[in-house]
Image 1 (cartoon, each protein chain N blue to C red):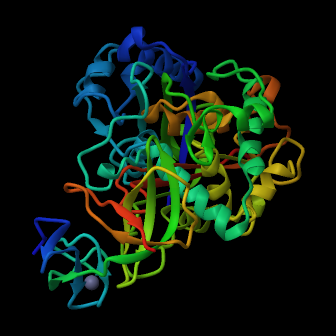
Image 2 (cartoon, each protein chain N blue to C red):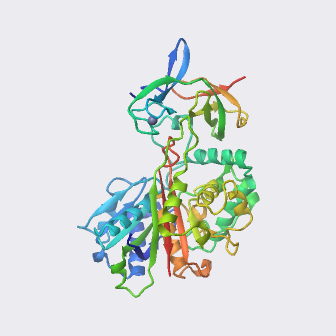
Image 3 (cartoon, chains in turn red, blue):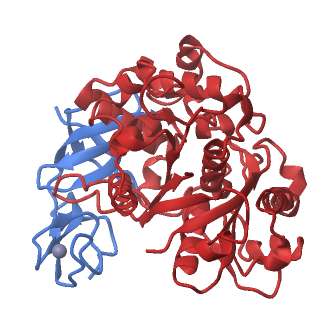
Length: 378
Length: 107
Ligand SMILES: [Zn+2]
């Protein structure tokens, strides 16, 4: 399979900035990516716009504002994995030879929504369940099954807030202690407020191209060595729990890239809630199932800890989670790291990295969508 | 042959309506037009047992929201009135509230 290159990336700060509107957020992220890639708007042959709550037609609306018109625009919705699905779609078009250079952009405005995100009309929401509650159910099960502790959960928030303090684009840029995390307001037991990502506004963008197009540039592109997209499987059956969408996505992307979890230097994974990082580091194979709490509390996934550094950007918990932008922002962080452009939070010698992005909300399935991308810069 | 309702009254007793797949044998909840496991359209609506055990639970607002493994097989999602955060493994019984899947401790 032919490789796809990422020529450049961009993102806004993730913050409360709803007044700016979709156009302004997207313009900042995409024009930053054009400059980073040394590509002009007129060179983009196809665009993919990820958003989960934005109105229909958002891609056309925001891209005309920066002069991307006339060429194919695809609007992509896959819950919290909308942005990373836009990247997967762009890759598919590039691999298929439909175009040579493509734009993936994601945007969301969430800060003016009060309380948990609104949900669809479904029987399982009539129970009172919401997204924090859904993650809390997984946390409770993990505590019962494997002895996961509240302190281990809190350690995820502490690590990611500490790392985000070095990221000028992050929503929160101040550290917190385990005590502060555990004593914050209970949202859905065992998840407290500081274990839930903030509802941020923002955009992120990436310019992708074929290997032959990349050869025109002198820059060092980052290569997509593996990519996968899975959907969830049935939960409310008389069988065992299905093999998770995250595990299936990880295995498929590893196989395509010809690598394993032990080869990764960096991982961005979906910590919308603290339990997310613990579950997904396990599903990624960074540790055995049931050991994710110990992995983070031991410091192994902190810089210099010996394992892959997890969520060096600050993750969704500290950087913020504007749904459609999130998956592309994960990729932006990895591109900066792999090219040695990450400033004070640069991880020395990073060469191979992975991003796992999860979308949920249809709770009869274990996930809506999960993407995994394996990136390399040689 | 999806059921219009999540549960019905049979002989005065509320009964959750699941589906039995004529091809793969899976029992799932709720009933649908095709099997959620294998896709077969050969589906029979079946009454599920009213008792189950809590596999996981959390408190959201005033309610305890639970994943429950029913004695007759499938997992379902339901809620209990607030109070003690019931233990995982506790037995509960289906006691619908309007059209919602409410459960009560099974004593
Ligand atoms: Zn079946």
